[in-house]
Amino acid sequence: MTQDSTDVHSEQVGHLGLITLNRPKALNALSLAMVRELTRVLQQWQIDPNVYAVVVRGSNKEGPFGAFCAGGDIRYFHQAALCGDATLEDFFTEEYGLNHLIHCYNKPYIALMDGIVMGGGMGLSQGAALRVVTERTKMAMPETHIGLFPDVGGGYFLSRCPGHLGEYLALTGHVMRGGESLHAGLADVCVAASLLPAWWDVLRHRTWSSGEAVVAWLREQSQVTTQQALAVEPSWRSAPMDAVFGLAGVAEIARALQGPDEWSVQTRKALQQQSPLMLHVTLEQIRRGRGMTLAQDLRMERDMVRHCFQTDHLARRGVQSETVEGIRALAVDKDQQPKWQPASLSDVTPEMVLPFFDSPWPDAVHPLRHLR
Image (cartoon, rainbow, N blue to C red; front, side, top):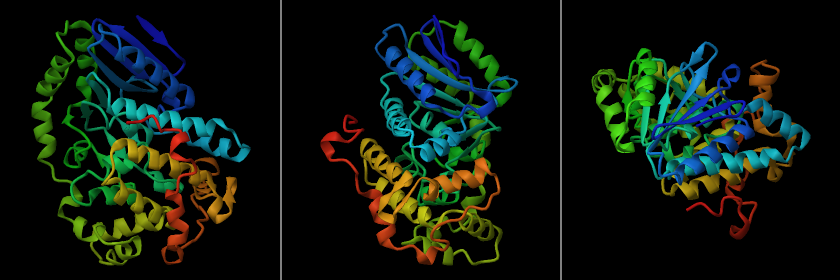
């Protein structure tokens, strides 16, 4: 049985549910319609005893694979924020609900994370029973580049990376290549991208006894390439990662990056490009998320994202918010010159940061109150 929406292709083949994200011109960036279709299909398959496992992939302009998902549709965020479109609220509520569904799925959910995997793409993959990367994978949570924070559960899964790597990835938006994500604990196996079409054919045509059998076969097929990927040490392994990103605040982290070595120089440069305010907010998010359940973290992030677009405690909305300004500079006007407020780390105060974590809703009516 095949079901097609414009940007999500789903089909049940034998005992497998197969999903292809099919918005290649936008690198499969998620729209509200895509979030809703993915939720509908996954909920349907979750209660179907004939579906043993679900496998999701992306497509690029040339065909299947090559790109997974670049995140949420930030141009839509920008336009919706400026015109007061109420569906922006729905987008984040429903996307975070989808992220929770994937993490808690009652059947093996397998993500083939070839190509770009960023932002919302991480939300579609980090809850998977098996997270598969290739040498073409470019994985990141780069939200601080647009004056946002690493959402879709980022406070939960980044904070569980080894040591203080999560703070580094969240603050800098560092892009991990291929097997580097294995060292970060954000992927499980690595396979040559050229093998993915053959894998897909096997998934479609073999008779599977269980979802666990699918996972076991994929692990077996990728055992050699996974070990080869793990043998390559990522650059941050030799850097003073924990000593720097375990410091108390963003200002202290920045001061510790004054050395002439390449890692310090590149990391300092990355931080200098981000919103000083949202760097402080993001560090607080990761530190809080480390002690939260997934549901608690997603509720916190839902509160935070409301404040990103309606920063009333700073008397800012619409075009004046850090997020709208960051998207403008990166994706709308593309001048790469965001005007951050405040412009320096030293001007950010706790009174600017802490209200991001105050919920606009009483517990009984929180839009994600149902998550457990």
